[in-house]
Length: 88
Ligand SMILES: [Zn+2]
Image 1: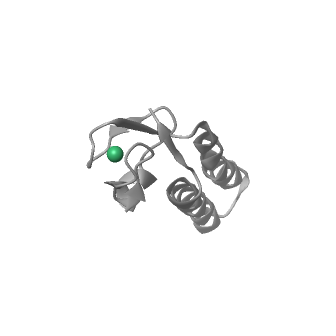
Image 2: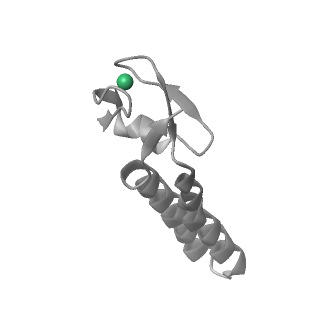
Image 3: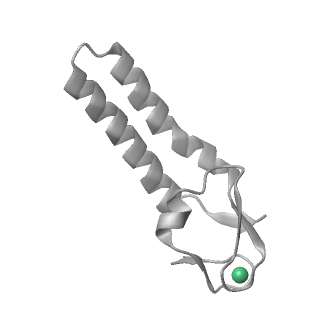
């Protein structure tokens, strides 16, 4: 579970946080206040962009698919474990 910046209680599951992109706001499931992902979460999209770019440059389809899948996976991991929550 991810801690709420307001009440310090569990705010959402890691799975929900992984889908919480920049600019999105959710309500804490403990206190109901608004929480958002820190703007640094924008950087989490970089691996996905790089993966897509690599896929476009690649002449090998499996390699391109692997690059995209790896980029998206990395983005979800960064979003889940590195991007802090702030008061929305
Ligand atoms: Zn809360």
